Length: 169
Image 1 (cartoon, rainbow, N blue to C red):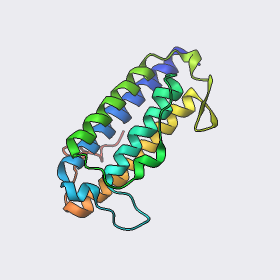
Image 2 (tube, one colour):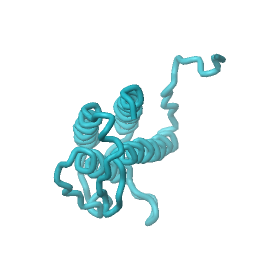
Image 3 (cartoon, rainbow, N blue to C red):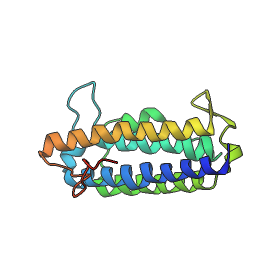
Image 4 (cartoon, rainbow, N blue to C red):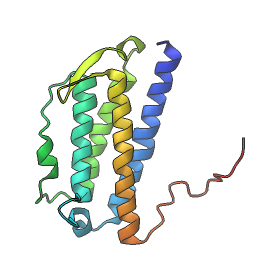
């Protein structure tokens, strides 16, 4: 893989993870009350607070441990346990630290490292596939968090507010 491709990957990771996802989650968490943050609608859904803890754990496991080589200490089941009392500021603060560290690790990668295999959750991945997984997994849950926030608060998140999305060419 040449240097142009790795630079594109690094730029996209920063854009999708730091500029888009982090700011969107922050905006949503700020809009939700403590009760809304931890409300569990039924046995088949997760509170938003647990989704944020889950994202933090997943990104630590895939990027910080898997790509970066740090020891994996994730206990996935704990991310979905009830009874957490973290507030929105604590949740976004922890997630921000994790995302910034993950971004730093991705920005340090050399192109020849992308094809190297790593083991994550018992499965073989390349570092590139771990990066792609984090972007798509994060995006998936940001969508859930956004939907919930819009549904509960009846707000327009206006992620693209002020932009003309109908520009052609």
